[in-house]
Length: 539
Image 1 (cartoon, helix red, strand yellow):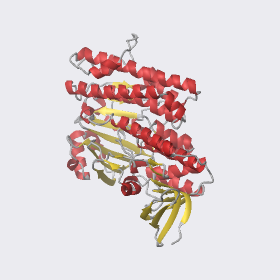
Image 2: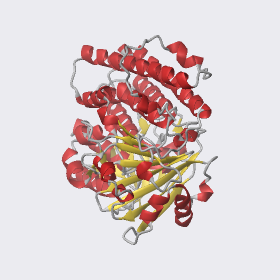
Image 3: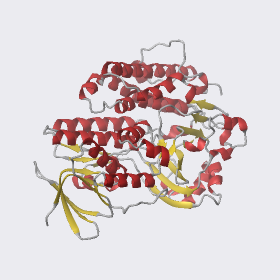
Image 4: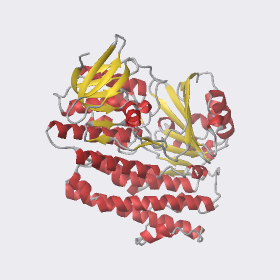
């Protein structure tokens, strides 16, 4: 059987595959691309896929790298940041500790209806000359050796067909077609599960309170536009609004503390909510919030031993790595991985050897993944501690905005010279983070603060340096100024770590954690980065 020849064949036409195709076309209009997708388009809105919340890297990728800002503004919801309520078993969420911004931060992100977004991506792909074959089932993959082309056999409803390509990309999500063939799947020890569903209508946190003062804490009082996290020991619940007039609800829980068997049906999940988050359960039981779908996933977190090859294949999106949805990093990893792949293909088409770059990008993405995993692994027990978690969230944001986010948003993620120049800063930031995550665990183990109805709003917007870190993500700077900025960000991490250590040891002098203390040579400048309220030192 004769095979059609293309420069690139992408297995999977979801978020990762379609954005990669568009990014490739944008970089090189001459490249020929075929995307083979299992689902038939158009796909349904609302009840389609999770992964609806974006953060700064993924939002920048969609809005600025791919040029989709107008679509995001017109067809999706501008996100009101992350918001956290430490509210396990409480009927009074408006009296529990709340963490979030009172006003929008400068760098935008969006809540995305995945069905609506992927339909738009598919239409754009076809309009730009990309072959997007939907409703197709891949039957076989044969990888070429040396310079020989790769070959894919698939059925699109009219008999088996074949496509040859110089490059073959696995963007097939958890099906991981190439990943399975190569045997490069990698398990991890992050034993956390999830159940999720969508309901009709917007589930508005405003209905949790009649207190005008509580509503006025936010300007505008649109908490519903946030990615709302309802947190308790060993779990969190997400609430994400969709522009198709639906709401995404999900429970993410440590198997050791909340077994999947307790949430793996809608009836069970609602019973669990009535116990752990009764105010949300009451809202969801209203007739206007009819159930649209329900799904669950066991042990969703996974790795991959190889993502890029000098033999002209690559794996991206959930086909490769997935960490944890707590800080919504899925689109970030798509953005970074796709950018690495586009660079490899460009170098190959220019006749340059790519083996060394493929190995380096593999090392980098695995490093980003491993560092991201430290935010989650062994940390779910902390999620019910309303004293420790607000400080952890501030730290985790600071780490993200200090190094990885500016590196990507500045367009330097593939700059080997800048990566080399900043290597010592990256290593220090990583080491500080690993030590801090251990310290946070130890603090939580020694501290029984738990959930309190203390009526605190911990407003991230009013922290000047924190607000400025977010704003500066969009700054355009030359290499010298950029390197100085990263060094200043890492120094800020050190100062924050020093303050956290001093504040916590003031209450718990028996906390050891010599690993963190040994790394810190910063001294207090007399101006706290966070007020004592953040540490909730007064019981």
